[in-house]
Image (cartoon, rainbow, N blue to C red; front, side, top):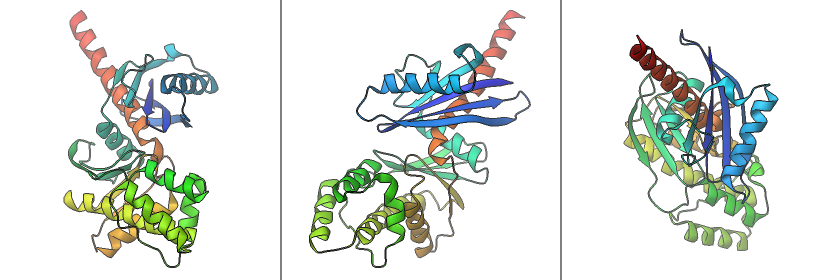
Length: 279
């Protein structure tokens, strides 16, 4: 049995996962937590989160076989090694949803779709290329302008009865669109649903370009936005793609979980090499 940690450093939120893996291939999520950076030093936040999670689980650093970072965490001192975000989200997504053959990673700065096989090997990927209007940061800016919290956005979006679609692909122009909607008296639910619909349409086009994988799991910081999930499913159904878009309660933690799993894989590989050299 080996304990490993994965730390996913995003531009807005840091996520950490503790995983227990057995030599026979068993994998168990022990704990996971996230913390918003809120204009603080990301290294300080990551270090504090790491310390807190270990303390809450009665562990110290020596109990971990590997500490793997991903995202923007490659320079964090506590790491043993670093893994690229696409591979960690694919690995974490497969752990959470074994039937998934693609992920949609919807984070603060971008949206990307990644196709994978049954071992989480990355087969191809597509990313949004135009501006930031398909990102979590854009959604957070709009929520702030509308006077609602990011946590309220999903529930409000689900109340929409006549969504006003935001057509601009540029974040600046899209924000101008929203200002105009407010001045025309469009309700908050209909504005937010329109933004979700616009973001979902771009994400679904990424899936189409990857060959319409049958089961997709949403990962990243926006994975718990119920309004966005509904818009994604509506967009896929509207285009009759036959794509099943799923979500897991720990979807947001997929990158950290995947990092911890890859860390365990690398630690065992290094151990075998050491034993081979010593023999």
